[in-house]
Length: 516
Image 1: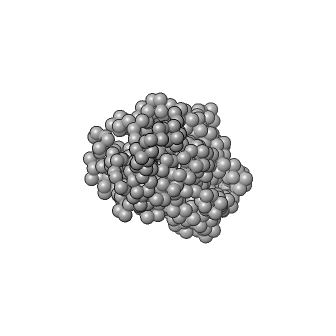
Image 2: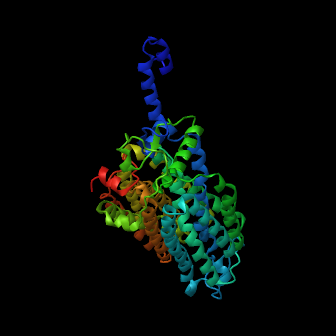
Image 3: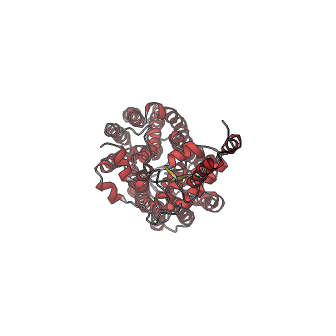
């Protein structure tokens, strides 16, 4: 096919005046003052920018490193609050840790009548995580943005985590864990949304599932750090310094989400970022194509529309989620399932102290079990859909937890209970992973982080109960984990399937494209 210029050259020289207006008209349409085609971010990523090219790969890896930090701050208590092998002080048994290290339990005598304080400080941490998830979920949807919120939580984590190492007594320790939990509650949520929102629709689910590899690697790395640094004070410092390094060496190289720019009315910045993505991926966005919100995409033939930022940002909150019957029902289910799954996931992780096996090995094996769980669910997610996997992975975990509650902890059988725990966390890790993807797809951009914040808060409520369940000891924790996993699978039956559905920007756009 010949170009427009070649067509002019080849055309009869007697008709230049007929062709000139046509060419001029097309040029005006593509110019800054002429016709522009408005398309969604998903369409622009798919058709012009590239769904997961070099730009998204670099951005995804750097952003997802924040999950390692969350693993450090969340799971450090497994080693910092270790119980001694012996019984109560003065009861005629040896006192202290067999490896010669120290823990908060041995330093402040948190055993016997004081044992409840161990579960209490862990519950306090997750309580503040719940509050922080809600606060930073709102802030990341509003003026702070995804990147700004991630910057704040990492800074707070570094400060409070290091200060925890200098706690003079239990109550200061409890307070600092409370403050650390506030910032930790927003790390994974902000990181997940920031890393997946610039990814194209066909690659988003696999990318979302892959974020949790970083969390598992963080747990495995933490077990290595704890093996080297046996003092709980040293461990808090070495597990908190990486947050400062992330803040200084990684965050400056991250970009804000183009979806956040769009719903905030900053279309010029959104388009600039999308052009940068396209350029880094070796592609180009045509001059006549601009971003639009869901309800604007239909009107892609507006004449004389200037490319300027929208003066009115589209905002939303949890109140808007509750007002809509569609999103209200989804939120109720998402909150309930996240709550139940968190009891199981964190409960099994913390329950390793009751297994009477090598603590470092148990934690490492649990982390290792999560990796194939993420891989398998990532491979099956786009084949079978979110809903079937959410059901089956929970029931798989529930089955082995049920088996674990009937196994007594004796020298001959304690290994079997550890196996039940590893397989239980294998199933629940897959569920916990895909729930992030599922939840983000159930809600539009304008309230996505607010809704995800509510789901994360519910998960933190489950995490609050988890250490209190673990303190019960024996087979009771496994029985509670089994019941929670089975009930969560039943609730997932009522969720809609989101596979191959658009990632909507506004509630009205979702209501127009979905049915209750």
